[in-house]
Image 1 (cartoon, rainbow, N blue to C red):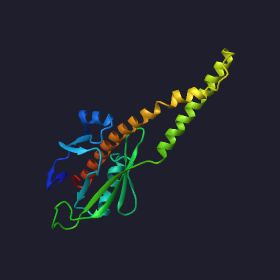
Image 2 (cartoon, rainbow, N blue to C red):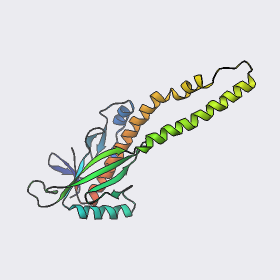
Image 3 (cartoon, one colour):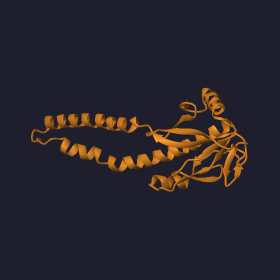
Image 4 (cartoon, rainbow, N blue to C red):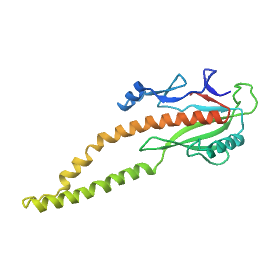
Length: 211
C-alpha cells in the first residue's frame, strides 16, 4: 500500500506543493506556514514525516539505489547500512535530507512482522553560507576601488575614503534582504523534502507517516 498515514488511516500519495496563502505567510517570516500534501496540512516547521515500509533496510537501500540510477531521486547516497541522504533544493541554500532506517512493525502497524521506518531530518550544506559571503565580499570590494578611482580622477576636491560610505550603502540592505532569502529558501527546502519523502515512500512500497 502506498499512501500517507494519519491517525491510523492511509490516503493515496499526491503532489506536494506550497499553498499560495501559506507561501505568503512564509515570505512574511511566519513560523506556521504550511504545505498541502495529498489534501493534508503539513507544517513547514517542526518534525518531518517518516516512511513506514514492510521491507528491511537492505531491500530499502537496494530499491532506492535503483530509483536513483533512473534519475528519479536527486542526490541519493547510502551512508552505511541504515542511513540515506538525498538533496532538498532551496536556492540559494540547498539542504541535505538525511534518513535513518530503523526496525519497526512495518506497514501493518501493531502486530505486523518485520519492516522498517525511515526518520528524516534536514541539514543545511555548511559550505553554502560561507561561499555566499565570499561572493558578496568579492563583488563589493572591486566596486569600492573603481568608484574611488573615478571620483578622485574627475573631482580634485574629493579626498575622503570611498569605502566609508560605499560599504554601508551596498552591504546595509543585505541585513533585511538575507533574512527574507533564508525564509523563502526554507519554504522551498521543506517542499522539496516532502517531494523526496513521497518518492521514497513510493519506491519502498511504504506509507508516509505524519509526525
